[in-house]
Structure formats: C-alpha cells, structure tokens
Image (cartoon, rainbow over all chains, first blue to last red; front, side, top):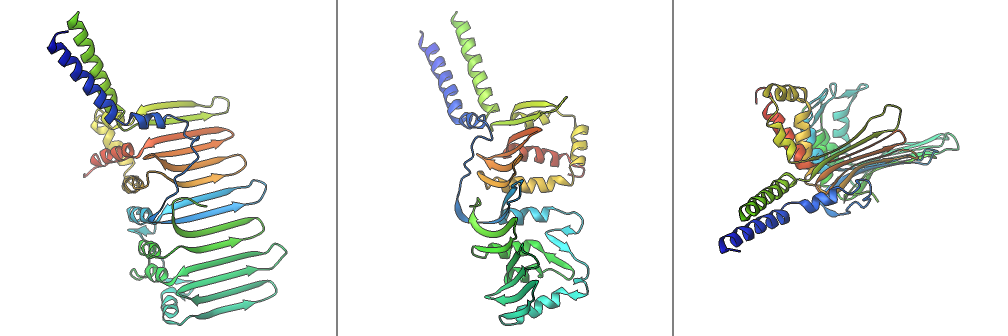
Length: 210
Length: 145
C-alpha cells in the first residue's frame, strides 16, 4: 500500500476511533436497558438539603408515596411560577387575617415570647398542646375519640416561620421560608399516625428516603 | 480499486462521525402500551441531539404557535430542568400500591418517568439537556423575545 494511502487509512481510522471514544455511546448502551429494571437509586449525603414526604398506608391497597425534593430546586423553581395567588415565590393571603385572627401579630407575639406552653387541652376525646420549645413551634394533637387513635405532631423552626412572614403585608414568602429551612439541621417537621396511615415530612441531606 | 476503497473508507468514517455526533446526547425513548381494545402501542427511539436540530427546520409560524401555547409553562420548565441537571441520579417521586407503580427520577442525566398500571405502561426516558435545548428554542421564538 502506498504511503499516502496508508496515511489516509490511518487518519480515517483514528478519527473514527476518537469519535467513538469521545461520544457517549456507552451512555446510549446504558440507556437502552429496560428503564424500570435498574432499581438502585444512588444514595448520597451532601450539603444539599432534601425535603422528604412519605405516606404509608396499611389498608388493603397498601399505598405508599415517597416524594423527595431538593430545597434548592424548590427555591429556584417557585419564583418561576406565577399563577393565581403565587407570584415570585410569594403567596398572597387576604389581609393577613384568617378567621379574624391577625396572623402577623400572632407570629410577632410568639417570636418575642420565651419558651413555654401556649395551649394545653386535655380531655377524654382529645389532647392538644401548642408550645414554643428550643426555637421550634410545636403542635401536638392526640385524638382519642375512638379505639383508632390518631396522633399529629408538627414542629416548625421559628426561623422558618419568621422567614415565611418576612414579605410585605398580606404575603407569605415561601422562598424565604425554604431558604431558612435549608439552614436547619436534620429534622422531622410533620408526623401523622393513625390506625391505617403514617405520614412523615422531614428534612435531611440524603437524596432518597430510608 | 484503491479509489473505491478510499471512497468507502471516507463514507464509513463520515457515517461513524455523523452517528457519534447524533448520539452524543443519548436517545429519547418513549414506550406506551395500552392494554385495551384499540389501545395504542407506541415505541419511539429518537436521537436526543436530532430533536433540537430538527426544530431548526420547523417553520417559524409553527414554532411561534408552539411557543405561545407553552408560554406559561416555559419559564417553569426551564428553571426546573436547569435545576434537575444538578441532580443527575435521584429519586423524586415514587407511588406504589398493589396494582400501580409510578416513578419519576433522574438517571444518568436523563429524566425517567415510569408508569406501570394494569391497563397501561408508560416509560419515558429523555436527556435533560434535550429538554433544555427544546425549551430554549421555544423561548427564542416566543413573541417579544
């Protein structure tokens, strides 16, 4: 084979080989595998903060719901949604009054109050406790009305509540609240248990639920 | 003979290069199976890089119409995909019961949505970069852009 032909052949083969190596054909091969077959999500622990929602139902249908949302993603996407009462990451509420309760004044009062119990109700049917403890607002409800007890516990960091009400009058700043939430350590925010369902909302640095 | 060999090599090399370029972003895969009388069965494999390229050939008025239709969703979709790219392998939603299974996650930089129900199965796998390219092109054709 003449030298110039050999050179042309070598060049062509080298270009083709380089193209094959540099192109993500390997990725293509992976992607062509059955999409539902790879059931192994990557678990990573990073500085990312993830909000998790888990619902497990023990009824006949045995439903389970797992939702994992990176707080940073929610912070960036929310301002892009401008629909109905939601604008630029803030949600409009009517005059900050709900059933003639001035929410803003209530939050101000709670913020400046020392830790303690605000509401304690204990009855045959139901126990209710609202308290401020370690800079968290805690609401605990135990329904004892029938044999099928249900229990609700909500723990919200005060900084998150402050951030939520940091927008102008008549607005709740969801993005600021999410940002404040992302600065919190691993924490359980909501827990609901009854005879059929378990609902948990919590915050951690893992991108999958346990 | 040698001339023919050169031509064949050139053509082969070009095909390999073109194939590698077209496949550089992977494939968009859509599988839909409806298990009922007259139900549709759609199995679509498209090179992801081909979609933004093909959009350049869509007449401007159709692109403007599509952009107008998607006007409200485009900023949300754009922000969503941009953020999703930071999480190339993550589970976002998983819903199960005895009969149905729904999952939305990212896997290898692709958005993967799987729905398995007794009457239908839907599997979508789409590179996030392809969705970003499409939304960018639609935004470019938006009225006033």
